[in-house]
Image (tube, rainbow, N blue to C red; front, side):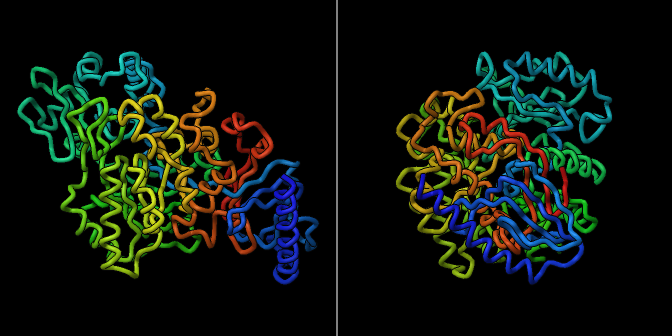
Length: 561
């Protein structure tokens, strides 16, 4: 502890020497703001914790940090009242407009049974005007159900929806967005019946008599989802505003949007041009976008305020563990005839990787199962040999279940594991059932990655999980759920320290988006993105981190919450 204190004091002293000199040279007489009397924490470029009690910025850039800063005459001074100040938190994997939809449509998160979910649907329909229930006046859309947490742990059926909504198509996404629950009207509109075959990389779940049950998994979801009319600009704006307001309220100042179509690519640029983005968006083009070649040809997109960056592609390897769609090298422990699904066929990977890397874009590959992770790692290595000029900061999204012998390849190839701490605490009730104890050694293996020198980009995968990053910090440090169970943490050897967790949600998340020169930590010259919170998370019991409340959120030197 003494060594850490000395390090912190030394770091602050050095920071003062540099920033005070910089302040004398660059502070002008207008538009300068000083936050005084704060309990400030940030990370230096080595990931070490640094403390300060004052931060000064002009317009959108930090111009000084430390203690007892010299101040110009014309300055706005804000008393932080001793509150803890942190860099703005970055969610490295989420779905921005999906969160907006989730906030505006039926939310089935936390339901305890199929009947409980049906009751929630009925309540929503009874309370909401028809025109606000989905992207059209006809389709009813929602999600968040998780049958693993229900009393019978069985997939729901179309029959229960048919009883309450016999004439209106209903589409309800599973919490991981890798399965949907639909009614008979939706199946009929999609032309799905007993004679319909499951598409490659997907499954139309059928009962013993061969009839569709109303559950569609992975690529089969598109048979119905393609019928839902796309949201117009007004609806997209409503979703964006709802999601942004929520993220700012929980301290998220930047997020990585994991897979957008061309319509959202255009929408985000229009929003950026009119200052319509309140949260920084690092957007990944969807590899399934038909116009992907044309979008890649346009090159990287970066707006002048740093609110929008598009220079990456999200590709899809497999499904999710909860729906047994994650692609495994060996069969599921609880379904011995099932290896999961490859959403993108293996034979298409070489051309996809060459297309993206050859266009000088980052490739972020969704891989949950150990087979999908291995295929991605192998294909990255092969493609790097073809494009040696583009080998840096590529990512595997989720990196959830990995053969232990494959983990070192992330470091060897420079692949960033983009991981979500709350996935572990949500999955812990079923993960061992799905893959067994042996494969669990390479699952949700945060500390193993960190010990080998990998940089982890942490996120939440909202709206699959709740967007609150303090839930992620808590899960990363404790390996416990909201009830602080199990007592010693699940697979506790993979817990990380709070400093490591904060780095995953700040500096390394920024690094994973090529934004670490501007955001991810607080330093002179960087953007003034920071939050004030109601407690010192470094001085409390880890169990209390989850309930942290955000008091203020600042982006680009402007208070947004």
